[in-house]
Amino acid sequence: MEGNTEEPPTQWAHKDEAQGRNPVATSLYYAEVENATGGALALHDSAGQVRTRVHPGADQLVIIAGDQVHSVEPLTAGNRITVVTNFYRT
Image 1 (cartoon, rainbow, N blue to C red):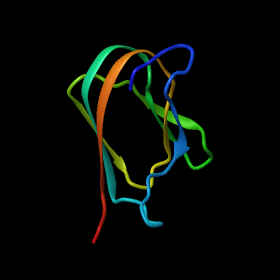
Image 2: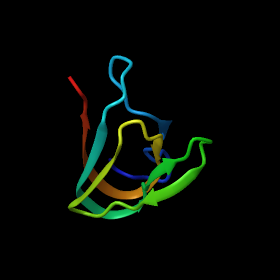
Image 3: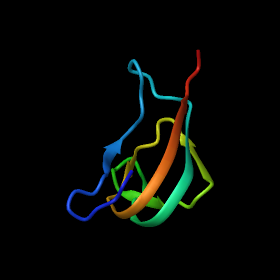
């Protein structure tokens, strides 16, 4: 992700899924974070309210439940490389 103020990258609130199934867990590894402004991972409660914000740092691993509603707030400056992995039961 590369941040800018005119069209900042963001993700709206959602749950990850594939073929109609939520993963058991989702991991987010922030490999690089450079001069980032914004771009926090927001975790939502069942009413849709943001309850926790995770501000990414370089070489940081975050693991959330696979059915956790989450979003990414606008990244208005800087760069970030994030590796996301979803884990499913077979």
